[in-house]
Length: 335
Image (cartoon, rainbow, N blue to C red; front, side, top):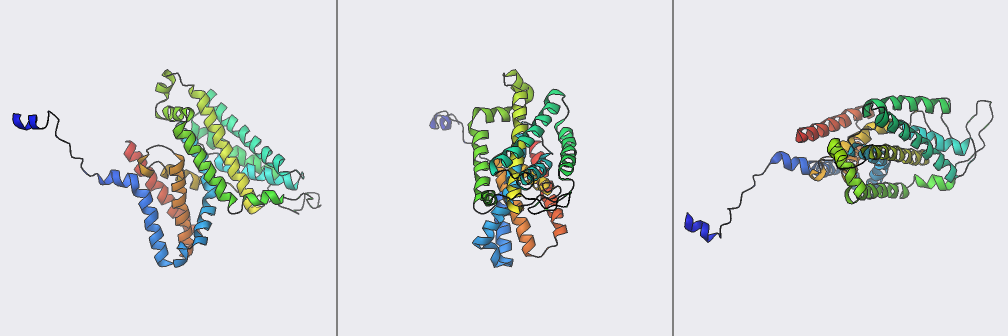
């Protein structure tokens, strides 16, 4: 034995790592699921893998991804913003009304929508940071307040060009052709890609992003380390509102109208995408790239099920199941 140790120059024998199936699935399960879905849907319907359909999927997930990026930022500081769907609805209503009701240009319309959304973000921050109301309860209350505000602002009507005003006249304003381009391919996909890349770099390669992760991991340790926790939480909710607003603006450009609560359907998909992103490549934390992959998974599911003529009212069952599965894996791993 002594001779064997001497032969190895005193080094300890290498420890064999056992294969852990759960860890492997946690790390690569989402990507494997996407590949499996692509193969299955392509075998059932060859049109699924066509380039035009791939572009259609990317376009369909653009708004979800942009809004989910905002949720990802709020999750990075151990928060949670439920008001993003309502903020997107409000942003959609404001930007269309600026064109149709007030005949403003694109810059004024976009800045007005973003400014209103930042007010919502500031209100969330005040309630959470100063009054210390739990994040989920605050943003749940804000969600209802903003829904009511948007309905009151639009008087419950659908805003569009040439709409009939309450006095019986026709709205004279027109939506800018330049603004209409934002919601078209490739610009809608480019905006999504830029949002993902910028936030990924911000969270992973800047001091401020790392501080947010430290706060999300242990607030007290971050505070004792001299990190201004409240300042970063305020910044996180402002950024969350900003991305929800951008999602609402892109939605307005895509559909060229403002429907009642038009942003609400994006909330569930965005939350699902952000939580699915936790497990992508074993990150174990909210991250922009993982959120994008989560949105891709949801987009492929929706597109494939539509091609299989699955009734639209069954979609939520599938999406809810995917979200429950992602949450189960995430929280089991954290435990």
